[in-house]
Image (cartoon, rainbow, N blue to C red; front, top):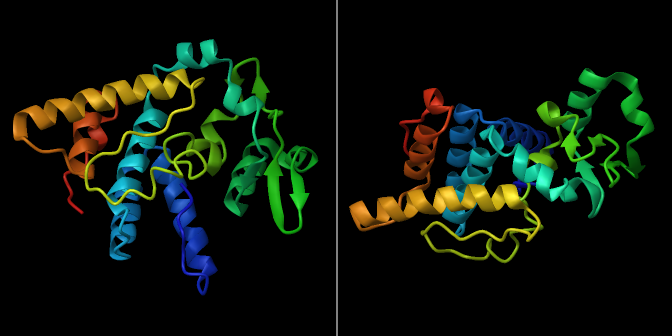
Length: 216
């Protein structure tokens, strides 16, 4: 999810985006730092943003979605607008792939993009999955383009995300998340906070060792 930063401090803004990318990869300490930073802005929709980022982290660290992506065919990589690249995305790609990256990246002014269909897709698979761009790591739960209507919500309750019809992997993840939310609601009579939900979901997955006991 693109985090709005103070335009007077672009350097810090880029650092925040970089940290958010690490959080989306499953770095729980980075996730905590990002959420704490966002909360400090007193954004009315903070809880909604926090939940959506957590949904996406859970999806990104799940190792059991290959069948859903195969059945989908990797549509998100094949169609849609060009994929925006941050400077750190280019650095990550060049570090792994070398100078050949420049031959497939589209430059428009000072901005860089990966055209779609993505050249790094092989059949339904993403061949750069381990170091794919920030925008790809944000899809679909933490994508502003997809969740635009959800982000205007200022409720403190976990939002029901918008999921593209073709994204079977996201549907599978949301069904798991919704189950845990409903269980928590049944026990405590309230919805879990973003960090309570994160802890619940990490306990269910292979990344439980990264469980965060912090509060925000």
